[in-house]
Amino acid sequence: MMDFWILLWKATLVVGMAVFAGMAVWVTIGGARDIKRLFKRLDEQHRRGER
Amino acid sequence: MPLPLANVLSRTNFSALDWGIVAAYLSISVVIGLLVRKYVRNMADFVTAGRGLGTCLGIATLTGTEMGLVTLMYSAQKGFVGGFAAFHIAVAAGVVTFFVGLTGLIVYRLRKMKVLTIPEFYERRFGRRTRILGGVVLVFGGILNMGLFLKVGSIFIVGVTGLSAEGWALPAVMTVLLVLVLLYTVLGGMISVVITDYIQFVVLSAGVIVITVLSASAVGWERIFGTIQAEMGQKGFNPLVAEGEFGVEYVIWMFFLGLVGCALWPTAVARALAAESPQTVKKQFMWSSVSYLIRNMAPYFWGLCAFGYIVTQSPELHSEFFPADGSGEGMDNLYAMPIFLGRVLPTGMLGVISAAMIAAFMSTHDSYLLCWSSVITQDVVAPIMKNKMSTPGRIRLTRILIVVIGAYILYWGLVYEGSDDVWDYMAVTGAIYFTGAFALLIGGLYWKRASSTGAVLALLAGCSAILGLGPVQKCLGVDIPSARMGLIAIGLTVVAMVVGSLLFPDREKPAAQAASSKEDA
Image (cartoon, rainbow over the protein chains, first blue to last red):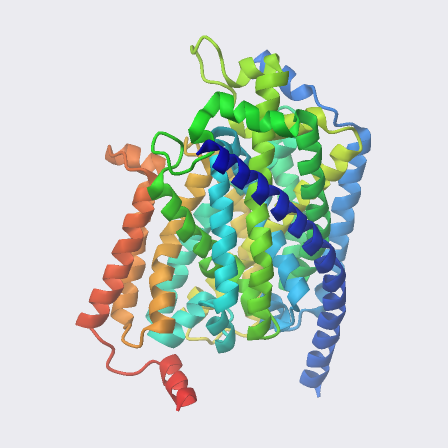
């Protein structure tokens, strides 16, 4: 039974870390793009509000 | 401070180069946080960044907020004492967050309603008195919950840098870190918070991966498992065995806490409310489930590596943490992970890792400070004043409250002396809010007969969770495990909501329900 748990936690850790590493790269690139869009959107909202 | 402990802390690889890296990171982060404050024009900008978060930025800020230094510290502590069995907490959090993202449970509907805070939903669904009471309960539980963040975060800095754990260093580190966070949060609100969260995500995620790899190689992958097997046996791997740290009751409680962490906890829900659309919320939560898994599992593993290192490679630390004669208490095991990192990571890398950990510290503090202060302004003070407060007045009050809450957590970090495990302290204090919120959100969003009387009773019943806190149990002379107390409190809130709603139904249909019926028609 203990072997099952050891295998389960080993697999969870390795797979989880690998997916997290991939996600971190994607979010880093996509997040920079989202920040640009956020500022653009805030500028537009403020311009509309001033008019 | 006993001399051996001072010696233990001082034997770190942390050098002037590392201090330079940390200082550079802090300066860049705070300056960027200050530069973007010009975008704040109204309360929606200040509290939800104008509801303009895309999927990736939402994941970054949610991860940055929820992967705080306090989380990393208490998780490492849990891994150190509970072994690999503690991994079930991470798995529960990941699975439940993915389920919430897939189904949109709670968060989708809240975002669709365009509320700024959870108590604002209470008002739309149950009326103003529920909003005010809900706001008070949320702030009480939330601020109490945040009480140990500063102290625990500072213990990491002290442990990894080798500063003195007593005397001037701990309060000084606490004060400097807090002032930096207050500076950009007060001025830039949510916009500064999400931008700094993004930077912190980049640094933090790289740090998490590097620490995990270096920790495993320092101790040896197979040796970590072998040590836990030899020292803890079955209970070090199987969370369900009764004689271990956990047990079935605890595992059920952790699944509920998984739901709380992503769908009920105000700082996590704030990210959903700031998303650019309800569909974005679903994607954001599905992907963030990976972060929710890793935010606990990685530090559990570091705690396990620290355990393996102390047991197999450092007899000196072994005698500090596990005194052989049993005469005195061992060293506080919160120090185990930072001391381990201070010993095994090389100079230079230690500075980068410390910057990552400080990133974790700051990204959590800024969001929590903003969240609780905006709830007091929006959900307690403004409704009491019958919403006559102007936008500049609201922003000014929120800024003042951020500073007041900051002063409180500095004070609480210095005076609280409860002996609770940090994770259990946080679960219990958080439960004061979230057990009631669970009944109100589920009842309010998915049960048409939920009434305002049921809501008020559920909020009051949720306060029973405070009985799970160590010092409170000591005062009352009782000893109930915190997991059991939490489950009892949930049961009480659900019963209060159902019985109160059936016995005292609302005479008028609440605004939110009326709007929803109209939409359905």
